[in-house]
Length: 107
Image 1 (cartoon, rainbow, N blue to C red):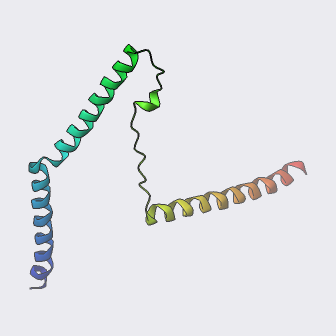
Image 2 (cartoon, one colour):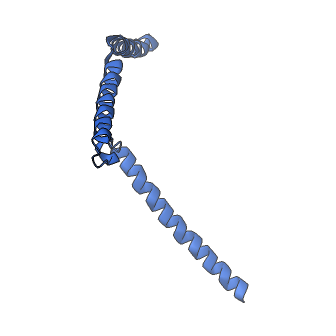
Image 3 (cartoon, rainbow, N blue to C red):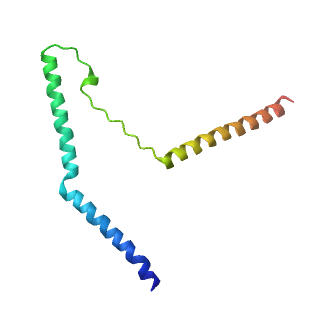
């Protein structure tokens, strides 16, 4: 009886995820988003071509759209700090080991 109670919410959650993914795929949201990027790119290409025809100063930064995305979150920030701390500690340990080894070699 306990297995049925545990699995039932899991099946419901999986079903909800499937239905939402199906809706997003069939609604065309992703394709619409890609189409908007394409239209914007085509407009910038036309603007570039007109600037070339009119012999204006051309700077590539004017025609490129760069969206810098920040994917950091609390977990990634914590792991980054933990990793840096680990690197610092391991460097200190390695330096101490080689310092002791250098005393042995010199004597």
